[in-house]
Image (cartoon, rainbow, N blue to C red):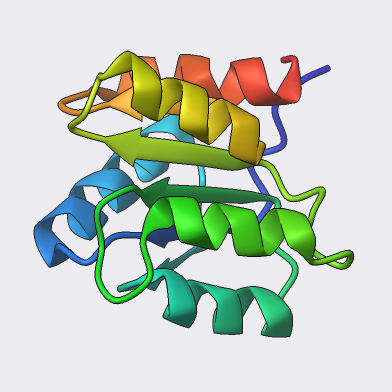
Amino acid sequence: MALDHTIPVLIVDDYSTMLRIIRNLLKQIGFEDVDEASDGSAALGKMREKKYGLVISDWNMEPMTGIELLKEVRADDSLNRTPFIMVTAESKTENVIAAKKAGVNNYIVKPFNAQTLKSKIEAVFGA
């Protein structure tokens, strides 16, 4: 199955520079419909207003972290099938396991490039 570059993507990070970097990487890969949220609660609000084909979220944010957002998304019947990629500077095994248990589709450790992002997205969609 080919990757659908028309799906709306939501990127969530409390660091505006990181939002800009991920948005630029997504553009390089071919995604145009990209929205941003600065924390988990803002992302949840956006997800309840618009159906996203993919969420790429940072782990460490205040007041709602990426893992808390992921748990909220997985607990919500209308959102729980949304593909979710966690981005973090932490490569600790327990974090990866916690994210997997919470239902993350894939995991990216910072720093990363467009090729890494593309391969992680393709893995999620089986492209």
